[in-house]
Image (cartoon, rainbow, N blue to C red; front, side):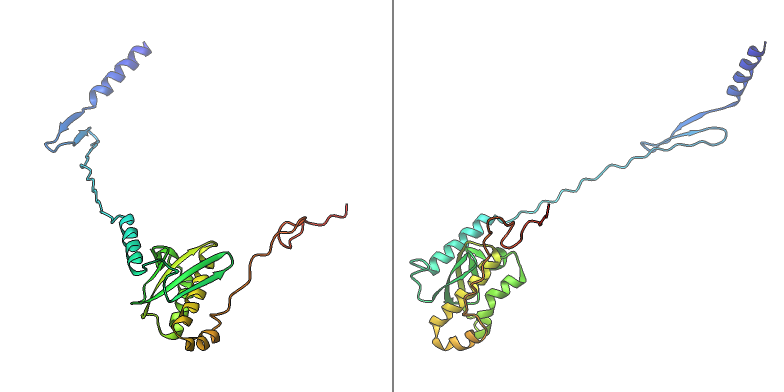
Length: 208
């Protein structure tokens, strides 16, 4: 009896609820309403995909152009040029050629700023000898460098430029020597010793 009453109450409650489904004229929109106003709306906007492409100049063509420029400016190679200097620092060796120009610096067939990764300190090492004599925009510098790291190569180039400027005129010796640009820095990394961890660092002492 009680079960029949509960079923009849359930059916009456369901019949009292009224649902109405309306599909609006707008696309992708669905609204459902009940007597107590229940609404659900779904809207989707078409996604926009923006594709931008930039055409980069090939790096190889720039390198070949610089290589052709260096070979045209230095017939016979580096050693055949009149204004020539060699600089060394740590394990780095730099062969430098100076020619009258506008102040370009090319290292290993690459622009100096690109080769030295835009480091201001390393770029300053190269400019100091020319700036000391006021030749920063009077000579083009062509360099072949190998060995060591970029810091050692930059300091080797500085010594090479200073030595090359002596071949321009012996009168340059006094101002360059005053700035310490003609002194070869002989400091190198001290070798590791047997029984030690590094050059001087020893393992921890233990009595027992």
